[in-house]
Length: 213
Image 1: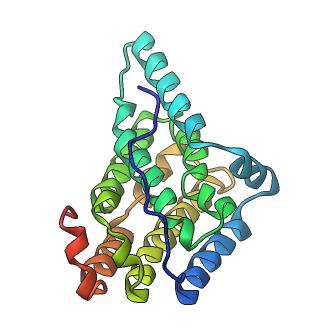
Image 2: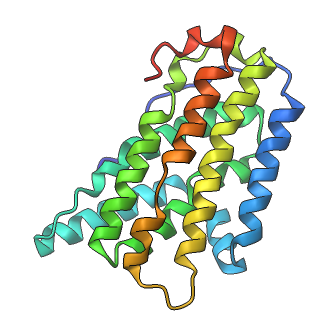
């Protein structure tokens, strides 16, 4: 897997951040922090997205050596979109909180890797989220001046962290077998919420998202 990062330069924001959007993101971050152990939280705070790319590349090499290839590169579009989102969302959220939009991925992949079926399912879910996320390059600076756009944009962070919170809870169950991850990773409602927020709430700023599926 090649080193990141996808080429994307967010606009120099001149818009006033929406207090509602910022509050939504802060609350989502707090909710995830409330269920994460102290040790894991410290790991999330210090993790970089480069660490996750490197982990996935190392796993790909290991699986290739074992001839049990699982195409972990499927996670790359998801990570690329998260990189773009974090850059674009700097107007609404502090850097420490934005790190948590990718930091839990490393732990989830490491644990799920112990069971190939679970890893395949997790990678598939990441791919589904990547297909829902908009192309940040299609969003203009003018869009950010619309508070309703900012609120819809913030809901991406809220829904992704809600997904992480659910998966983390599954991974931490006492005596859990890895196979139990599979039925727990159902993202239909979460992805539908993201899609609804972007398609139904954007209204007059729908045009900048022409590249959105």
